[in-house]
Image (cartoon, rainbow, N blue to C red; front, side):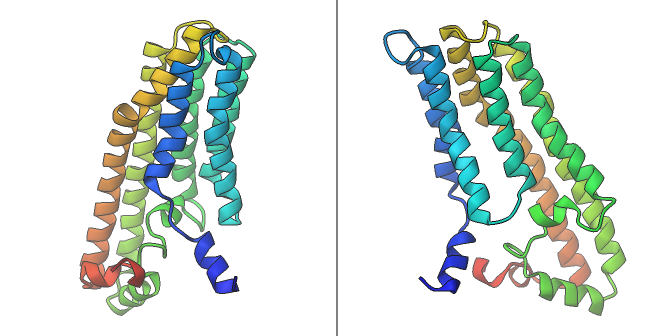
Length: 238
């Protein structure tokens, strides 16, 4: 395998259906269907369910060959869920954990605006999607650099807002569903139900806000660079 093919493999975009199955569908089914004493029992079912997103998250970190703050936080979140369940802590800590992870990411997005490397650049304004060199050249040509930086700030706040919304919805969903003592079959089933509902209740609204941020950024680029949308996208996405 050549160095070029290795690089292309490392940069291969994530399969959303595979991610959905490993991180949500499979763990939810294991927790809801295999936690009974006639199957795996609550402890082993919890361990097995968490293995899927944990291994997937670690594999993603290795595949990218660089530290990814959000992926790393996801791995920590899975470990915390396992710790709460295995140590049989108060189930309210599940709600705290579920809210804290997106809240930390949202806070990181806001704080990164004060640095040279705002997170919005790696999530939305990335050369994996956008033809960054062409956009940068057009911004300089039409003297749109300052206006573009303001647009990035607005997009950053919208992006942070999507994570803060996720934090609120995560907390509310966890408090409504997970009420049984950790280490019981009921706790696992509730955890599985919460996992299954997280996509329609949390992911879709949060993604909607993120898409608004992306739309605003593209519209600003189009206005400031006088480029068509086809010219803005990276060549391999056209």
